[in-house]
Amino acid sequence: MKYIVAGNWKMHLTHSEVLNLALELKESLIEQSRKIDIFVFPPTIFLKDVQDVLFGSLIKTGVQNMYFQDEGAYTGETSPLMLKSINCSLALIGHSERREYFKEDDEMLRYKLLACKKWDILPILCIGERLEERESGKTEDILASQITKALDKTEMERLVIAYEPVWAIGTGKTATPRQAQEAHAFIKKLVKHIMEKDVPVLYGGSVKVENAKELAREKDIDGFLIGGASLHKESFVKIVNEFIRMKNL
Picture (tube, rainbow, N blue to C red):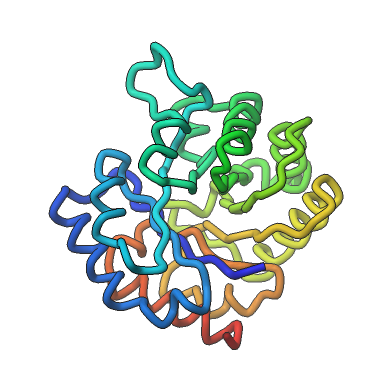
C-alpha cells in the first residue's frame, strides 16, 4: 500500500494560474512522486489541460466530483464515461462540501462508488463528523454509518478513504494528532472488516505546513487530502516533503 498526498484545488484559480501551479509541481516533485503517490484535483473545466501539463510526470490528476450515470439529460454533470475518455481514473466521492451544499447522501455515494467500480476509477470516499456530533460523542457512530451505507453491496475492489472532520475545515479549529489517529484506527478496522483488505486512509482536516509533521507521525495516517495549502507550490511541496521525512521514505 503506497502513501498518498493529494491536493484538492476546489473552485479556485483561473486557467493560467492552474496551469502555472501544475507546471511548478511537475518541476518540484520529481523525486517525491517516486516515493509516494501524488494526486491533484483541479476544477473540472481545467482537468484535461492540467493532464497535458503533467504529462510525463508521475503526478496523477483526478476529478472533484462525478455523477453515476454514463450519459443522459443531467445538465452540468460529468460522467465516468467522459472521464475515462480522457484517461482520468481518480475521483473524489462525497466531499463534505458536496454533502453539505449539494445534499449528496450516502445512497447517491453508493451509486457513485458502483460507477467507479464499473469504469475502473479509483474513488477517494470522503467521510467525517460535524462539531455537534463530535461533542456529543457520536464520531464513531457517524463514521460507521457513512462507511457502511456507502459500501453496502458494492463489493469494492479498490478504495481510498479520506477522513475529513467537518468541524476542522475552514473553522479555525483543528483536530489533534491523537484525535485524528483514533478516527483513522477506527476507520481502518471497520473497512478491513467489510472489504477484507487494508485501504489507505488520508487525513483531510485543514492540513497545513504547521501541523503536517505531527499528523504524519501517526501510524494510521496514510496521507493527506489538502485544501487551501495545496493552492501554493511552496506550502504543498513542504507538506509533501514533511510527510515523506516523517514516514522515513
